[in-house]
Image (tube, rainbow, N blue to C red; front, side, top):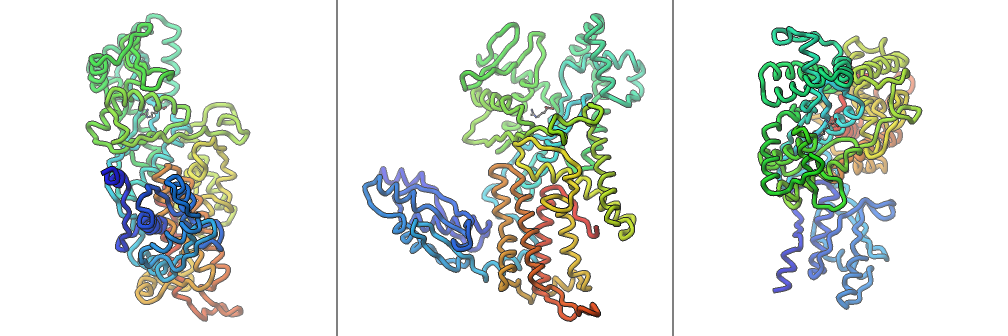
Length: 607
Ligand code: ARG
């Protein structure tokens, strides 16, 4: 019975040749089937890894050491090399592995079957790149961007917007049910002073949209009055009370202020092609009330200096402020109501918060409080805080304009556009491309480089914002990648091969694997699924950028070594077209474009 109970805990592995979830996943299943069969008494789980050196094959399974150790604990002596051999002898029949070698340390080195790989890649050229099969379609809330009304949307929000969008895209591509939520800061006491100031400056606000050009200036003006004028301050408080009591004129003023901010935010989202559902803190007002009631009833709140606070499960961490001494709610309260709403109403299986690392403690306290009061069960819901570092200027100090002001996002995007235009003109593109093509390239480069520069670094680090670096056409940059794809696509079109002909060729031709560089490229292209899965584990997009760079480099090596189109050196006349290699070019472009899609980059047909 004990045996039974034990084996119940053990994860089952099956090798199903019909479903393909990426090479690494398939090999892992194969090796785990063998491991379970060779050592049914052990519970070890291990994934296959790409080999570090060609002499160790393409992938390795390194479970032998651990198996040997655990056997020893059971009183069985078996050297890792023996273990490796035993596992290798149990590998189920499959089409993926061509050759297996067991190293003296017990590592199982595996070489991929060229036949299997070329067929798989051809399938992708024929039918497009499909996501791996989902075990379960998850309901996922991605909470990202989240600027604050009437305040500057700053570079930190830009990072959150770019990273959040890309995470949402990866999960959408995998087939999950993703809810993209913009948790806008649109509630709180600052609206009292904003409305009071609105009443004074635009008394007609109930009948027409106030013509506020610069909402941040408006915010600063009202803040100044709030800090210096006692009467105004009193009125501001009354306005808050009225607003939270849903008095209709105050609600109208609040709506108008939000609307002005919303337009500014939306224009940034439109330019960057980012979709979000706005569901700000105000959305949770009634839920905050019921949540506070619940927490009070259940005895989770403590009085502290006039405010109501709540501690999480961990001792020693700072508490959440649930109700302020003036009775108002806080950022903490809205996050408590939101996490509950997302789990109970949205039925979220997974919640992802994308903000700067500075908020990581806030989220730790949030999970802890939510778990303590029963809103959140970590064994049922996955929650991640996707934190990122701060944006620095080229002087490695906080990112500021030359005059020392905070950088306005719109101005940053505009500068991106003009810098992109300069770069393209310096390459004489304006004389080569049509005006429409030039415009498309300009935008693709400008927005692409801003996104890519952010995504290609490990997000937890601070990052230096530099247009010069982003617009470099060498190295791991958007410009390099965009060029690479247009160049690859142009190989066939320059030889007057239409995409129709390529599709036709895909029916009869095979993907070439004989040349060492062809084979290297094929293997790189088939790693796409593994990279995607890796992203869903640690939510780090730089893996995908590194992968993209790897594919582009493998392509260059292939293209330098293997003719796709042979031309007469003198006349330029086309002598021979290697259709099979053009298919490999096509496969490369397809994989790179899929990566672009996930990273939010727009490929251009000419550049
Ligand atoms: N508005 C916040 C800020 O600007 C970010 C909100 C993030 N989302 C959340 N659920 N707390 O810092």
